[in-house]
Length: 195
Image 1 (cartoon, helix red, strand yellow):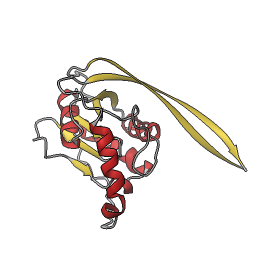
Image 2: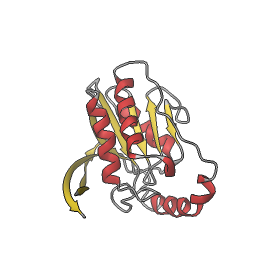
Image 3: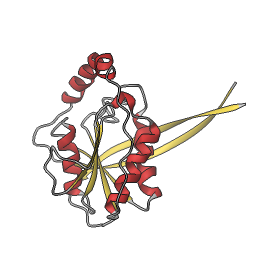
Image 4: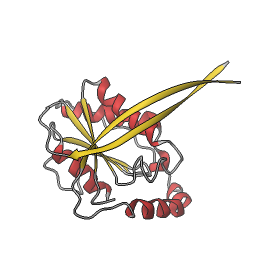
């Protein structure tokens, strides 16, 4: 007998996000459509599982998580840059709905970063957890071995069409001039017996 599980996520946009003060804080900035207009990554991994793994990785290293939503851009570099700017520790994670992810640090240029995970079709849940773990370690000021990145030259042509569609849907949720907001989140985990 085996079991499978599902995670249901509730996300509710709250008040305007301001700069945090907790030195253990890692801010996760999600893109405009994440968990709302879109609910799965480019390889159909539920956003709930992605966010849960990143948060678990942060918490396992003693970090404190805050989730915000960036409405002004679908550009990953700027999503991550904003996360780092508003983070109490200066470390932020940016994530697009299709799953592409970045770890950013306050003071770096938007197009610089600590770690970049550009090939979303190759990012596993384990990788997301390790991204959260590394972000928390950066927040503690520790030396960190980068999360291993898998490269597949065929991933880009194989997923190019769906990536374009997801980007279009993401871009449709952009609200110019709307400041980022804090996001309340919760997870409901259900376990099911499978035959």
